[in-house]
Image 1 (cartoon, rainbow, N blue to C red):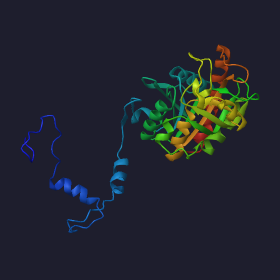
Image 2 (tube, one colour):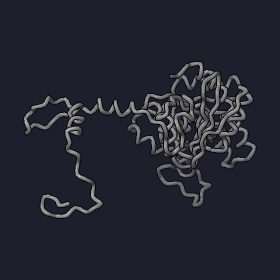
Image 3 (cartoon, one colour):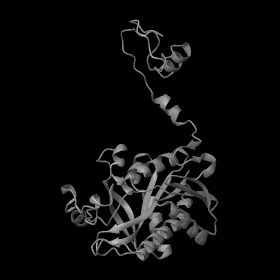
Amino acid sequence: MTGSKGMRRPASACPAPDRSETTRGNFERFSDVPRGTASNERPKVNFKPFLREVFRMRIDHVYHLDLHRENIEGAKIALLPGDPFRVPGIGDEMKKRYGVEGREVSWKREYRTFRFSVGGEPVLAVSTGIGGPSASIAVEELAMLGVRVFVRVGTTGAIRKDVRVGEVVVTTGSVRLDGASGHYAPPEFPAVAHHEVVNALLEGCRKEGVGFHAGITASSDTFYPGQEREDSFTGYVPRRFRGSMEEWRRLGVLNYEMESATILTMTAAMGLKGGCVTGVVVNRCAGEGITADDLALGERNAVRAAVASIEDLVAKGER
């Protein structure tokens, strides 16, 4: 095939655009400009009807989570632990509280999915891995399948003396120390939890008798420098983070973790409902070490509060 100057187009080159009447008709269907507009005028095209039509298209399978729409049976609520091996633990707590058995429906990479039924409504537990980028994929793909409420369930390090190991933090908003949230909203946009999810989590803590604090979380892309940890390989903390923990503490921040900024920015910006509950496994005012017992206690209490919140979230009847 030759071009206008006689040069042969490589066989691998993209084919020429389709100029058929069908293609022109599809384009003109979404145009604001009536036919017959002068050829030297730049056409003004309204793509909104076209985009609305695209977004209405039914998505039946998502790639990274390897989930099909029928796998989730219309679930609107998802608990989001980071660790894939925490998902069966959520299943144990579901059985204990609601008497229901979970079913594992998918496990690909860091994304492991169990489905439950609470009050006749399907509920998911889906692991996201560590950090905002992988969490953003989980939120995106679950939302494509119809999930509308997202509750992060994780662990955290407290930075105030009065927040004790074993208690939980219910995040009302996050300091955006991540990068992924910036792909969804400008830096001025707040990473805030939805009030219905916050209230359900607080009620879940009360039901389970778990000590809790509600407030602001610092959500960092990194575990070591971004949280001003000196117990890293080099022990070096870049200048921008030196003194940051004390600054966040003085501003009333309760804790550090690594996913809430992304999840809460996404849910707020996309018209979804998001929340976050994390179990305290270390108090940074006392030291950096995390013991196995403290880790188990923090994980267990965060899961207990999250699972107990589900009945209130189901009662809201999210559709």
